[in-house]
Amino acid sequence: MKDKLLILTIFVFGLGTRLFFFNQSVYFGIDEARDAYVSQAIYQKGDLKLVGPTTNGAAGLNHGVLHWYVTGLLYLIGHGSPFFVSLVFRIFNALGIFLIYGLAKKLFNSQVGTISALLYAFSFEQSQYALYMGNPSLAVISALLIMCGFAVLLKDKHPFWALPLMALGLGSGIQFELSFVGMAGLATGLLFLARKRLITVSRISWVVTALTLFLMLGSFLAAEVKYNFRQTKAGLEFLSAPRPSQSDPGYVVYTKRFITMASDNFVFPVLFAVALIATCIKFRRAPAYLGILLWSFSGVFTLGLVAYQAYYINVGIGPALLVIMALFLHRKRMLALFLLTIMIIGNVQHILAANPKGLIMDIKTQTGMLLSDELEVIRRMYATASGRPFTVRATSMPYRVQTVWAYIFTRYGKYLPYWETGNVLDFPGQLPPPVSGSTCLRFLLREPTNGIPVPLVTADENEENFFSDIIDTWQVGDFVVQHRQAKGHDCRNSFITN
Image 1: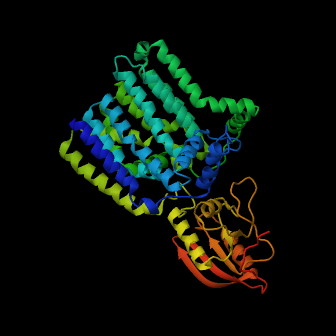
Image 2 (image 1 turned 90 degrees about the vertical axis):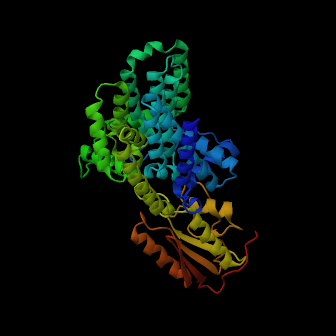
Image 3 (image 1 turned 180 degrees about the horizontal axis):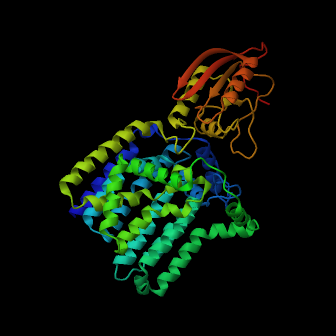
């Protein structure tokens, strides 16, 4: 009972760190807006999907579609609110506290489990994944499920659920993030470490495992059959193509990513280096320790991917580092208390400094796309308009794609504005284009400029200068809005009704 109360308390604190500045930290950029449209259409319009979002850096490859089915259901329950979806994602990530506690306790002892859970609760890395509504973030839980299955296989007398758990984790992880296919190497290695225990697995458990893996990956197979094995061909072409040159060799990129992961979990990477060396020296043969070490270095299975520089390429590996640190600390009471205090304070300071601004640049190039700021932008527009129609020209990323603002105006607006530049094909969301000249009231909206080439910013302002004059300029967060008056004397202050 005491252990349950303790882990529940840790969960409450962990959830609290993920809810710091909740209203102002919801990131809503192009990917989130696209997902909002596509995922809701699955349920509202019956527009079923077999192929998920496109991957970065590999043409023709797509992630699994499970993310859209999960997100669409959340939008349906939350009546289209990104705030609700973000809340559930944060809770979902915090549930990993129970999983890492359970697997560490089963593999080692309750002290290791408790310290692992405490580190997970205050991890800056995990707080960022909790804020991230993109498809990779859910794969954190997938990795924990693989390791839970390994723990059950090693420690339970009748490990019926061991392999199904591993299959569920591997399959769902590949659905959420295609590069997670490298975790098949981790799963294979874990099975090798626990090979003597495989004879205790019943035939029914093997059948359930196969069915689970088939259900998780079935959409990939169906899509391949329907689209003439398009993704398989793209994958083979990607593997056979020469890799683009990069400034650093692969092992340097891997090391930098590993150090970043350690820093975002322990503040000082050297602390983890000491814990890792101690674990490697003291526990070289026990399957449980070898399994955790294999987990922590499982990024090598995806090292050859061009996307390895991405922050989320190591999604689901960070918790392995937490368990290793817990193994180092659990028998050193005074040292453990001192180091845990340093790491928790450091992580909380990092969370308080970074999370109110949303996702870090390492995850999203265009930082500052916060839903709270976007809502304040349109609130000021409507307040200025006072019921009059208005036209918006936006400098956005991707350029001239209105998906983000179409969703926000449609979901939260009083009425729809005219959108000056139209929309790029194949992007969801549509605001009415200008008709019969211009409205008298116009706005030039500039999104946060990280990732937007300066010439495009200048070009939009120069073009708008032909149509209107600046009356006022205001800034909301990283958004800049120019309130403008049309130059034409025939501008209108009423809506076109036909």
